[in-house]
Length: 172
Image (tube, rainbow, N blue to C red; front, side, top):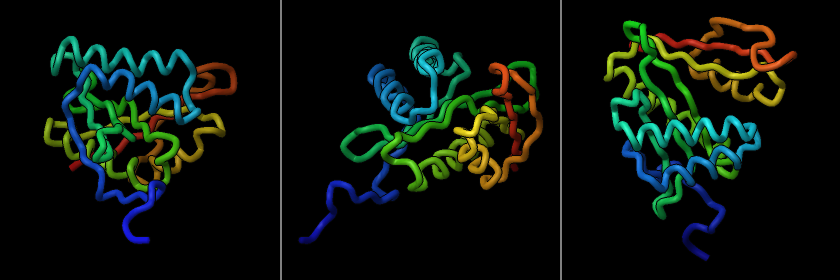
């Protein structure tokens, strides 16, 4: 048998886009829910940011990069933007890869593209936050392996025993 099987995957087969479309609301929901990491409230927040971008465009302050397969299925995305009141700080609000596509380099490629786009928009410091819960240990390792350093630890921020960890990376 020649050719790719349905479960084969090649990072080079992905296409990336920055435009946001109405169908992205459901695509984001599917991706975020597929990870098993996020609460229902967090899922709603992810959808609100897409909706805000659709309503206000760039004025929303939310920028997106989507990774999608050639058939159009979105398998990962980032949402990022400038932090109001800072000279050149940006927040990485969301970085999500569909549960069935994790561990294949999509997150790293999305982060690289996000940092590049943010730097072109004037970002010199990218901030990312995550939970201290054990579930998020791979996320914390991902940030450290991507050149981020732990900048702050806010004990019991989300709930008792669930602290907020803030990472930062200086961009060229």
